[in-house]
Structure formats: C-alpha cells, structure tokens
Length: 547
Image (tube, rainbow, N blue to C red):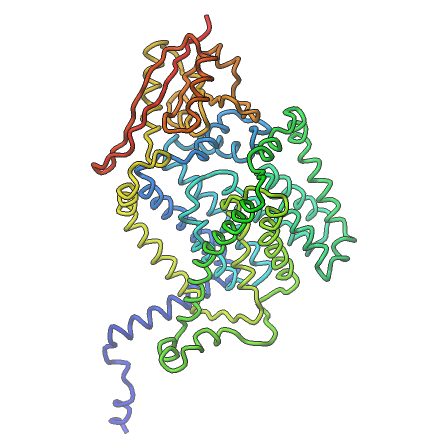
C-alpha cells in the first residue's frame, strides 16, 4: 500500500522546464483575467496599461523620427498654442489650447511632441474602456483596450499631435456621454452630453459625422421613445448651443473663415477623382483595421489546447469561440447603439465624399473607427476565454518590444531608402537656429515674425528659441497669430523653399512686401548616422523693423 502511494504521488519530483512554463503562463493568465474582471483592480490595470503603452511608444517614436523634424501639423499646433484664441483660421481652438498648456509644462523639444501624442492616445484608451464597460463585461472591455493598442492609429500612425488625433479623446467622450444619457435619461446626463458635444466641435468640425451618427442611433433604436421623451436629448442640444456661443460669435466675426478653408481646399470638380479618393480612403482604413482584428483572432485561436486542435480539427480554431444562446456579458441595448454609430461613420463619409465631390483624405478616418473593436467584441455569439486576455496582452508586448528594439534600425533604413525626401528629412530645425542667430546679430532683439508657407513658417516657430509668430502670405484663413501690419512694424524674416512649386509666388510676395529686405541664400543639410539628407536652398528675406 505504501509502495502504491509512492508511485502515484509524484509531487516531490522535479517538474520539467516546459511544465513550469505552462504553469506560470496559466497562473499569469488567471491573474490577468481576475484583475480585468475585478471592479477595484480593473481601473488600475487599464490605467497602468495605457501608461505603459504611452511611455513605450513615446520611446519608439523618438527613435523612429530621430532623423526628422516634427511634422508640420505638430509645429502648427504649437504655434497656435502661443496665443489662446477662439479659433485659428482653419480649425476650432481646442487643439491649440492643449498644445499651449502642454508646452508650458514640457520643454519645446521633439520628444515632448511624441509624448503629447501618446498621452492623448493613452487618455483615449482609458475612455474607450469606460465606453466598453457600458456595453460588455469587464473581461471583454480589457480585450477591447488591447485591441485598440494594436490598431496602428494608436501606435505607428499616432506620432503627430493634431486635431485629428485629439478627436480620439473628444469623440470617445462624446460617445460615452451619449451612452450614459441614453441609459439614465436625466437632466444631468443631458448636460454632460451637451458639453461633450461642444468639446468635440471645438476640436474639429469633422466631428459632425459622429454627432449625426449619434442622432441616427437615437432615432433608430427600439427604445428611442424612452430617450426622446426624457429631458436628456433636449437639455443636451440646449447645452451644446450655449457652450458654442463664444466660438460661433468668433466665426461670424472672421466671416466663417474655417468654412471658406474647407470649401476652397477640399472641393473637387472631377467625379472620377472623387471616386478614386473615396475608394482609397476605404481601402486605407480597412487595411489599418486588419492589424487589431487579425491579432485578436490569433489571440482567440491560441487558447489551449490549440496545438491539438490545429493538428486534428484546424477549422475548430475559428469556430470554437462562436456559440449560440444568450450572453450575459453583452448589454444588447447599448451594443445596438455602438453598432449603429460605427456603421454610419464607416459608410457615411465616403458616400458623402462621392455625392458632394469632396477630396477625401485618408487621415480623416483616424478618429472614426475606435468603436470597431468594441462592435466586434460585443457580438453576443462570440465567447471570450480567459486565456485570450493573456494572449492578446502578450502579442501587444511582443510587438511593442520588437518595434522598440528595431526602431533605430528602421529610422536609419528609412533615410537610406529615401535620402532626398525634402519634406521628411529637410533640415528646418537647423534653418531656424541659423536664422535666429542672424536676426540677433543684426538687431539685438527677439525675432518676432516669420513669413512663409505653413510647411516652412510653423517649423520656424517651433524650433527657434524666439518662437516667432507665423504669417502665411496669401491665405484668406489667417491664423490670427499676427498680421502683415504687425510683421512690417516688428520686422520679419521671409523664407521661400526652392524645392516648392510655389517658389515664384513666394518670391513675388517677398519682393512686393519686403522691398528693403536683406536677401540671402541659405543652404541646410542634415546628417544622420553619417548619411546625408537633402541639401535645400532657401531664399531668405530679412526685413528690418519699422523705424
């Protein structure tokens, strides 16, 4: 009897390394699932994940963009933030306000812009988790957050802070406020919905697509009468209008310049070109969504015993996570809202672009698909095993650390493959420092105004320690940061890029408005890891201050 007991009890034997690994993975997977499902631990888990994502991808972007100056949009946002206004010519003011506040705390450096972009996206991840909690259970909500972190918009393509990226905070806030108002139907929830709508509109007018989608969801939902008979939607509309009054007054004062900008910049006369751009927009955004959807599918397939299933019934890797019947992990009423909103914002813009012949930029899709992971995870027939949480988190970590390790090589390789890309590798930061020194040498005063195209002027504002206000000749939608009269009074440096097709127009404007300017030709070139970037000649006009 003692012998038999000894033979069956093998706990005293040393386990194999493979068995120990499997046990460790099971324990870690169980811990992660428990944390994600615990009401107290889940917020710490999500905030910690969002923070880790923001920090790691800030480091990645610092490496990836080491050979480049900051994007023009980022420099433009910084320039707006130098002067708090109710609007900036092309766009509403919120992006400029946030940039202005950010750089009052952080230094004006490239890394701080990537930190701003990733902080924006980290906040968006947390808000999307709060949205998911109103639609699915906590386990599924965390799965949604990691899916979003694998969406290229939240990593590779999230490098530039601008109004499009900021919408990944304000639009989730708007959807969260709507789901809250649809559920509670109270005056307070209506106030929050109206404020969220105003905040979104102060980011970019493009959010009207989502506001319209929310309106359609409210009208199409089976419980629409409960919502429409409550004070929530009407209080929201009133609150939205009241909150927007200062900006609407500004719009009238500037003769609706942002609308002039949109109409003159993005209208097309060719139906064929409009169709081509709309198809490109759809293809681009579908391709981006393939990453989170594909990796989430992989995480679901690799649930044990995945290897045995693969060798015996490979199709079952896909089918086993789908099952009929009720699903307590999904709030069908709120899921319906999410499905309607996502469908409308997915198909509405390209169809509208075709009808009205609009130049559809692929980046306009940046803020419109953050609900897609939730819309998929909220399908009731999808069963989400606990192990899938560990799998998708492990995939995110592996992808992130791999890209972090390879980022210096990717940056060097990118410059080696396209060394003459003036827009990407042109040394505008060097030009800003050189012109600042030239101004100080001549006038012993701060360089106050730079005149040039947006692609040239805004980087000067960012990189010059004097942060001169940008003035863009010929734009009817002036940012309002300075004026031609102020430029002539304070003096300015005009810059024309010789690689730009608008060079003759730029030189002609300088000749007409800076007749007494000192004229220079300045050449800049950046070297990265011993590789030369493009050598660019700049026509520089140093116009002295008025006496």
